[in-house]
Image 1 (spheres, rainbow, N blue to C red):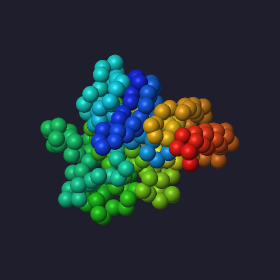
Image 2: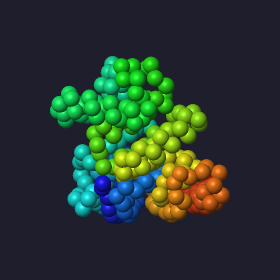
Image 3: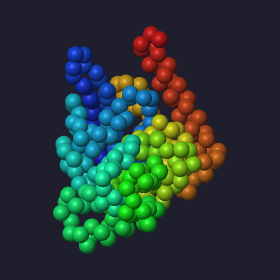
Image 4: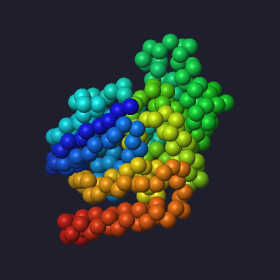
Length: 257
């Protein structure tokens, strides 16, 4: 298991004009927590996720993973992208095992681990198919299996269900919760979907418009499994909608819209 300490993180992109994307982010993410990041487009959610993955460096501030400074990608971390990012010339089995292959894991162990996670995400029987032969939801399952096969302690997920249809999205949400419960991973999950965030997360972190700052953190007290129609969850959703309206109003006032 792993935990993050995010201290005063700010990100500024330089160029013809500087763009401040994140400002003074302070957050602790605990071992085994399912944390959702929510906020308007362009607020820096994906940037923060990439900083936590070691793919980008903050302009200022520090990130600690298990009390060690995080400056580069780390084997404790797995990343699931907005699309599955599978290699079209490799079978699903070969795609899921790619990270293990790069690490030099012997074929026997590699095959065992790949098969285990293909079964876990419901892709047993599709090992020899190619990405173009699978639906979008099935490709995303393969992307999740690929991340899990490397046995990371943290899984960073950047709107992984955004491109699939509603019914597939519900199924993937349920499957992800089952995997999280079984594997005890820390999950940091970026989404634009308030209902999804409240259904999945232990906490929901709402960011302001750019530069993204933490507007409010919502703790979801309901035990799992949760029901989408639960009145307490619907109340929290309404509180988040109200906070988002405040974010929009503040942004409109700042830019005199």
